[in-house]
Image 1 (tube, rainbow, N blue to C red):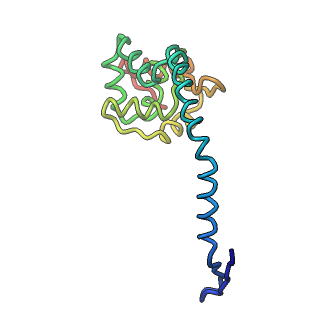
Image 2 (cartoon, rainbow, N blue to C red; image 1 turned 45 degrees about the vertical axis):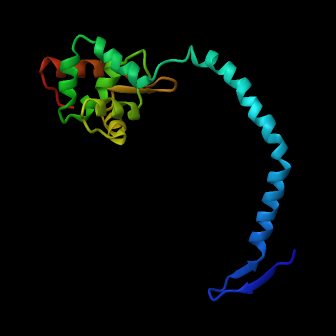
Length: 166
């Protein structure tokens, strides 16, 4: 196959015939691997039989776990009401408070948690609030951010109505 090069006005070169060559090679490869398609289609069916065994013990969605933990909490209404205030640290700590020790709560999960309750709270704001207010949450390697005893006190003071400067 012959290629022809020509110089364009912009100073770059155009290679004519290259597209046809590449398309031809793709067609040849497609034809060569066409027989392998039947074998590939059979493999996922065997994998599908084993897949339900893997999916059965898998944990629920973390958001669903966090919402169910909130539903079980005796101060559910007070937590939601407190989260609707403009205190970003409190909004960031409440999901950690509700899911402490059981659920890995990320900033994205916190954002989705508040979206379910009609509060617009972006994930970067969660991370920023926790980063700026040192001592209320601790970053751990495996479990993501975890609420500290100071963070628990902060949330409980907000629930009791006593305000504390952050």
